[in-house]
Picture 1 (cartoon, helix red, strand yellow):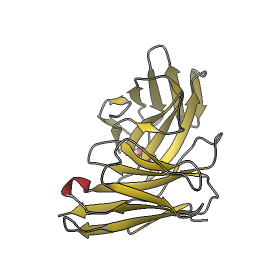
Picture 2 (tube, rainbow over the protein chains, first blue to last red; picture 1 turned 180 degrees about the vertical axis):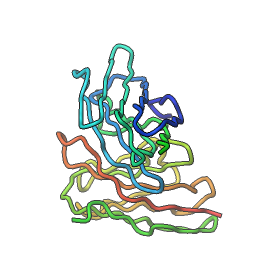
Picture 3 (cartoon, rainbow over the protein chains, first blue to last red; picture 1 turned 90 degrees about the horizontal axis):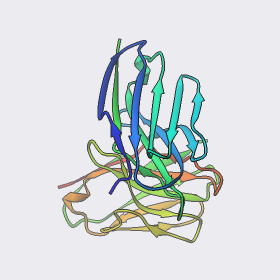
Picture 4 (spheres, rainbow over the protein chains, first blue to last red; picture 1 turned 60 degrees about the vertical axis):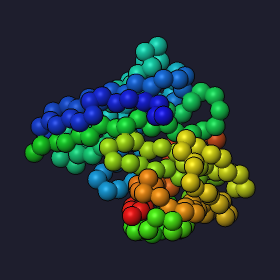
Length: 112
Length: 113
């Protein structure tokens, strides 16, 4: 079974607005990563946040991590049409092999 | 520098047929992974290879076998395809223990009739 649940499953906003996606997970983690998948393509890594970090920024992306609630959020500011894609969170368990466990994703649509 | 490449891009099989999905990476990465993605779902790990010469089962290994041919190549074999194996298959690689990002190939779309 998959580790994470993402919320919402689908999100549609106007260009220029901010988009927020949430991810919850079940077990203790080493780190949490966010990936983007454009339609019909492979996944592309966006950002990684470690279990001892609370917030991280990369360009228009802001990721937060709350290990007490086992949840993370991805904020995309000033959205663009090119941000239209599916976004997945993936966790690396604290113990055991370095394997990614994916959530089911949020499909983001940016309307021009 | 092509990154991770997968062949074929698309394949149609009949139930019971076999095939091998090929994956290669040119980044000198130690670890390689095979995932499947079903409609509306995230990726599920089928098998992985932490380093050349080792392979381990992931979440959904039944019906599949893998071979880590060398450091560059990691193949996935379906011995007797079933309709439930209709999916998009992604290969990924990762550099080493402290390099946690995975790099994904473009995927192979498989339809089993």
